[in-house]
Image (tube, rainbow, N blue to C red; front, side):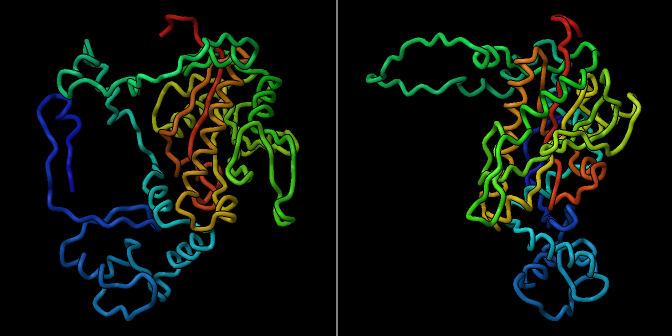
Length: 358
């Protein structure tokens, strides 16, 4: 495997290197296990599509979730494996999802951005050590390019597009229940219902969704509000209601926000956050074990994130989205199992701080 010491590299003291190490990853446990060459040979000899006698299989393989057994000691992992199969997860989508389900990670501890803050000229420092960045735009240089009229559109949508920026500094004010309700309704509210061949309900929001399934749920975390008590909620979109999950005081809400966001401290300055949690089982019902299904769910979350940013811009609010999240901590707080339903991203908004504020 390739190894890289980021901290040493930032000091100009290290390069990529190669270490002779084999690692097996268990989707069922979300953990890596180092292997010797002999262990790898034993593991690769075990078929994945049928049961065989377990003679000679190291017990550590069972404990690490690398093999399944039909005995009592393997009952929990066997049930988990059957659960993922029933949900319709594609193997590689499940692997990618499982590897990214952080718990208790503080991203700033290993963040390149944090390290670069120590440099007087961070971008110049990067350029000197790693060369210039790729070109900012792509131009083919065609002699037959067709000039287009310069647009000058007006109206609310185009003004919101111009004002849409990522905001990470807020002035500390809370949002009214009316504002929170407007944002949730505009982004996550259902506009229309229909049926797909008489077998399933199709939904319509203001954002597109793969298969018209809209698997992404909104779980607001109110940090400070005029009438809404701080706490963790679920947005019941059909009834346009907030369903309380856990009350919190403001300090607890700020701490939970930073834990959700892997230690990114700016998130606790927002008035409220929205956890985007995907109901994978809903999408996979239609696209069972499809190699593109997981990507479609992530695209759904991205569509909602941009709609959220535009709605906030139209309301004079600042907004952000981050996918750097401790998904396992989010799932624990919301009571989700991570694979039927699971957190994938975090939105936040509030009144932006004055220009120039720290």
